[in-house]
Every structure is written in C-alpha cells, then in structure tokens.
Image (cartoon, rainbow, N blue to C red):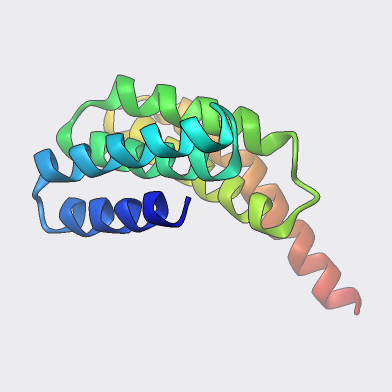
Length: 130
C-alpha cells in the first residue's frame, strides 16, 4: 500500500508539471496495486481516483473526471463521521464543481458546492457558539 501511495504522489507531481502521460501511468499503477490489496472501494482507492480526476480535468477529459468524482463522493458520503473522510468528501465536491463549471454547467456546479457551503456555515456557527 505504501508503494502505491508513493506512486500517487509521483503522479501528482507529474500532473502539476504538465507531464500528463507520465502522471496517468503512475495513477493507473497506484490504483492497480491498491485495488489488489484493498479492494475496489477503499479510502485510498477513492483518493487516488479523485487525484486522477484532477488530471483528467487538466486534460479537458471532464466526463471521465466527473465519473471518478461521483464514485468517490458516493463512497465518502457513507463515512462522514471520520474527519479525514469528511475533508476528502468536501474536497471532492469542490473538484466536481470546478469540472462542472468548465463545462459551463453553472447551476450544477453550484449544487455540487451546496453541501460544502452548508458545512462551512455549520462549522462557523459552532465556533461562534463555543
């Protein structure tokens, strides 16, 4: 698992530097390892999938990115009691909204962000009350 997560980091670096082919190769290898060890639906698999979705957004492959974001969102939503999963969930919603925005689906992008905006309001209300 550790090696797969290192590959994920390498993939992120290549994505940030515009080396998309190498990035995709590392993401695919990371996912292959993680799925063989953890199964198809784990926190790590979904995290790498979201990162790969970000790569697809950079490449203009929005429908493919949207599919990865939606799958991860569904997984994360079932485990929001874990702070790490909650953070990943809202980050995924943000990424999903950016992808929808790039397709000029502005209302859908706003709807994707609504749970995130509501969560931020609840967090602020808790801080004010404490």
